[in-house]
Image 1: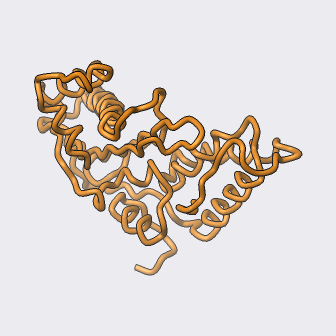
Image 2: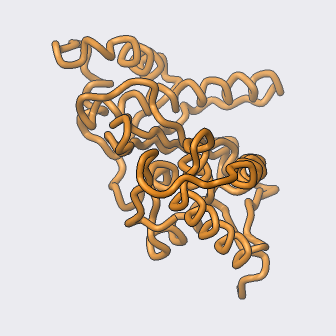
Length: 243
């Protein structure tokens, strides 16, 4: 998706027949199960299914050209991967021009293999970037616990805590601070949830530089110079590209 493109529910001409757009986006939703690189774009385009407009259709055609250009791109799962759980959590604060809600993005690795990812608009409006990041941390922690329980059901022993990387220092500080201030009271439930898992040793929260934040792919459109280096770190490979 073009990073400069700002899609809205009110700008542009309405499509005379929305059925083709809805059918196309419905098919793309299934494709996101194996293509993390298109997850954010499909998440964004699916928000306009009720009243799609011409700019939305043009963005969908742009995405289709990207898919046709890289037919062999997909996930690679290593046979010798470790069982270390690593997760990257990020949020794009107030990015929706219609609702000013933030977008949560995360990706979770089992060893070097990407096994879970999501791009989703948050249910409530966050009043600061730290609040948006903390809601994303809570969603990521919940997914980590689900994966840890699944590994336990498979009788796979994972002794080390899951590593959770976040590029927001304020959110990391709130997670390690036992005192809740007035400005965090309205997200106290999320704060307690993440802090409890950190204190129990289920999750280890670590800082990361923004340029190394893999979850950026799931929160905003990126240029090719930023997108493909991140994809290469997520075990996403093109079988037709020269080695």
